[in-house]
Each structure stands twice: as structure tokens, then as C-alpha cells.
Amino acid sequence: MKKLTLLVFLSLAFSSRAQVTIEQTKHDNDIKLSTLPYYSFGKGIGMTSPDSLFQMNIRFRMQNRVTYLENDGESGAYDGQIRRLRLRLDGYVGNPKFLYAIQLSFAPGDVGEIKEGENINIIRDAVVFYRPNKHWNISFGQTKLPGNRQRVNSSGGLQLTDRTINNAKFTIDRDFGFQIHNMNEYKDKFSYNLKAAFSTGEGRNVTGKADNGVAVTGKVELLPFGAFAKDGTYFEGDVIREKKPKLMLSGAFQQNNHARRTQGQLGNDLFETRTMKSVLLDGMFKYNGWAAMASYMSRTTNENAITFNPEDITESNYAFVGNGFDYQLSYNTKKNYEIIGRYSIQKVGNDIETKAPNTKQYSFGVTKYIWEHTFKLQGEINYDTLDFYNGTSKNNWYVRFQVEIGI
Image 1 (spheres, one colour):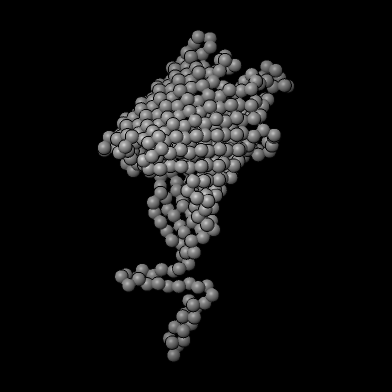
Image 2 (cartoon, helix red, strand yellow; image 1 turned 90 degrees about the horizontal axis):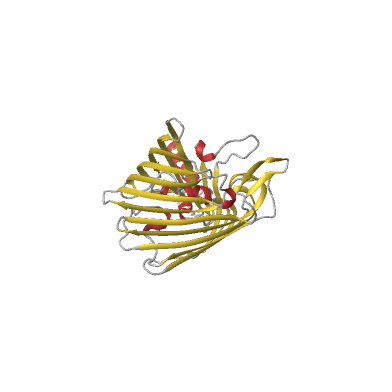
């Protein structure tokens, strides 16, 4: 009688308002509770609530590297570091049309210098999206602006261990604001994307610096032969080995009104604001393991780029103006060994030619893709020449090994 009472009690408990159901499959002894989330495994680990009203995907990646470097006039040195350590969460809430993306960084070189009284820069992306259909994407929050191709691509999708010297100086990077994208990509016919952004112009994680200046960004992407396989415009190199030639041409323009920092969204603070204009042009080609990229970047200001401290006229800082070209060529073998060569040239603007050198950079690398860009071994040698206004020059070089892994 006691056993019968216990069975009745358990039956009532599982059929109560909690609505927890137990399902046992006919083919095995796997017991499933309907209130547990559903898990999926692909790019990261995904969890979906049983009512499909919530979904979250979890991903991480890290870059570990060791470098031997010699700068002109200095002794050689070794540097070992965790270059990047990222955690990404994305999914939707309530409806798959309402999405979110969060990305956090934890490596010291990725967060930036920690200063007393200032924000800790662990937040890279915190943005919500509304996608009414496959052609439109409206977002609000902090994320990458529709700028140059190499910056839009994840650092995990690079062929070499770092982006170019021009990307370091002329990119428009992340910002807080609204973005609207109109996507029109098709497999084997002419495609195009239109993108616009209205943002603060101050960069990521900036607080307490409200002003009347905003940044306006617009971009056009053209794909004459159709979309790349597996969103191939978002990673470098032809790891997919495109079966047909694919080409992308893009152009972006930004006007950052009353910018406070030396590189618009990046850099140290200026003593006076400057309105900056950036032009960013890119080309990407992939076919049968071959990949080529070329880019042009420039920045100008509405006034002289040099600003002075009103309390001490001997102290100055400047907006980094000028232009640069990048050229990159690679071949990926059928065994996923890739050889990469890159050449960059950077010319500073007339306003700052006494403050900063013109630079050339030569890079050569070999990458072994174990699991596409998510698990790879990278070796690189890099040589820089810096030509100064007074006629002197410096030559710096480094050799580096890096391992990237993630999900």
C-alpha cells in the first residue's frame, strides 16, 4: 500500500502546474525533461529554451604567441604573451528577429592600459539587432563600424598574426550608435550591400564626454560574381578553395565631427577637437586556393592636424593624417598549408611630417590550418623601414610563432 501511495504521489507531482514531462525514446534509455534547454554544436555551443523563445550561443578563442624582435638601436628581445582572449555570446530573445551579440576581451594587450578613474575596456561588442527579413539589419549599441575590410574581419580570421600598419593608424574601428544594413547577396549573380552608421565618434566604452559631434559612416560593397562561399568575405585566404572566381570591391566614407582623439575612435586625447574625414577602399579576390587583397586608407582634418595645450603652448598632440596602401597575396594548398606575402606603404600628411615617419612594411608568413581559422599554427617574419623628416631612418624586424584556437 505504501508503494502504491508513493507512485500516485510521484505521478501527481510530474503532472502538476510545472508541466515537466518525461519522454523515453523507444530505441534507448535516454530520458529527456521538456524544461531543459536544447543544445547544438557548430560554431560554438548553442542552447535553446524548450519554448524556443530564447537562444544563446557561446564561443571563445585565444591567441598565444612568442616573438623575437630587434628594433634599430636596441638590443634584441623575446616577448611571449596571450595576445587575445575573447568570449562571445550571441542569440535571440523572444523572436529570432530580435538578436544580440556580446563580446568581451580579457588579455592585457587586448583590454588596454588600466588607468585610475577610467573604464576597464573589456567590452568590445554589446549590440542588439532587429532583422525583419534577410535583406535588412538594424542595430543599436557598440560594435564595429562598416569600415575597411581587414578591420571588419575578426582578428581570428587573419592570415598573418596582426593587421597592417595602415589599419593600425587609419581604421575607424568600433563605436556606439545605430547601424542600418541592406544585404543583397546571391550565389552566382551580381550582389551588393549598402551600409550606414550614425555613432558618437568617440570609440568604445567612452563615458562622460558628451558633445555635439557625431560620426556618419556609409559603405557600398559590390560582388560582381556573387557571394563568396561560407561568408568568405569575412575571413582572409581561400581556405574554402572557391570553385568559381569571386571578387568583392568596396568603398567607405566617414566624417567624424568634433573628434576628440588622435585617430577618431582610437588614440590619445587631443587638446582641441578636429573634424576628420576617412576614405577606405578595398578589393578581395579568391579562387581555387589563391587569394589577393588590396586596400587604400586615408584621413584628413578640417584644420591643422596639430593641437596645442592652451595652458602650455610647448605641449602638443596631433591627429594622425595621411594615407596608405596594402597589398596581400596568398596560396593555400590542398593540405591546408598557406603561404602569404604582404606589402604596406604609409605616408603621413604634410601637417605631421615632422612628427611621424613614413613607413614601409614587408611581411611573409606560413600558416597551417588544422580546423580552418578556428585552429591554426602561424609563423611570420616582418620587416619595417621608418623614414623620418630629418633624413634619418630606422629598420625594425621580428619573427613570430602563434597558435590560435577557439570554438
